[in-house]
Image (cartoon, rainbow over all chains, first blue to last red; front, top):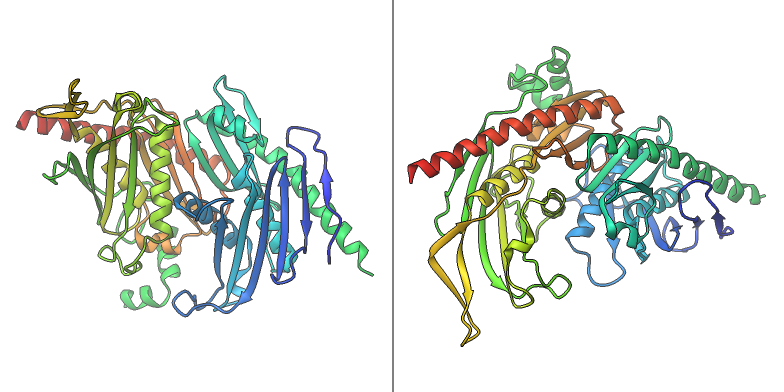
Length: 222
Length: 277
């Protein structure tokens, strides 16, 4: 069932973001997440069969695949996959599905900055759409520190290139603490604390958006 | 009896130690394993080092080759790190193409090299758009007992400090590069990034320098890389359970002290080889 594309004009410093759920027929859950011009399409299959070599006796195995827009997945995608996989593993209730697999496939439609954040947000929406039991939701925000020391949230690709540090955080919905952190560039401890505070503030908007979009979607089902 | 308990209930076994604020191998929660460093171990490489953090053994060899600089950065050379986790180091790794952990570690090391501004890439360029050095850093784990990322950073730093590159001139007539093997210069290292890895147990207890067992039982892993000016080069926490702000600050402080310990070690070893010559 397709829902209306939700486009939300953010009030503080995030770019325009939007999402659509349940757009693909084959995956158990699917979603797109758009942040400005960055767009990711996510599909979730699970709980499904798992290869004997990869099965874990007491919980589900989570696999993440990130397909770049051009070319084959390389080392950079593997590092991003590790971040997305471990964040999903912490959020999902894996012990409810032992010896099964949950596969999250992310396709980059367009990359205009904040790619890892968009991947995580799309993955969360797709897991919700698949109906997999989770202990908490997560969302992700990227902060860029410019050469003058100014902190920009949700940077575009151009702003990322001109920045001296890039920090991506994933925040959980229940306690608003940092689940995942991935940084490049050098920065001071104060700048780190400032970025974490800004990310937590921006995550409030995204969690509010998750809630509204799910509410709107299910209120249409009679 | 303890061995039986350890196999049947590994998490309970570790918890019983953590309650007493210590760990099965006798360490404190904030204690690193003894770190030893050996440089110039590989004679065929331009620079090499071997580091042991407890049982984790990692070796790095640097090979310098001449190549044309990339078109988008014609006045810079580049460094290509590669982390290899062969089946030799642990039964977790099977033969074949590099797994996710090895690739993620390679990307992490590449990011740390760039974030910390370890080497001035412009110095690796010999002639703009024509010739530059490319440093292939092959990091191989010989024995995996946890805390791979810290060991990789230390071994890379030591190997780069140890590396000697011959002087290269371009012959004006033949337009070919000529390397003078007799004249060798060491690389200029700007920064000393050092990593500290932590494991989070049960969402509340943080232990430093986890062994492979502790890593597999932990609920989250965190690596903090600081340089000698107490600036952070990387805060790498690839998911897992959440970490509060004060615990993160505590980890950063521990990482800063570790940086000083390791800088002293690397300096001591580099000085000792100089005096030996």
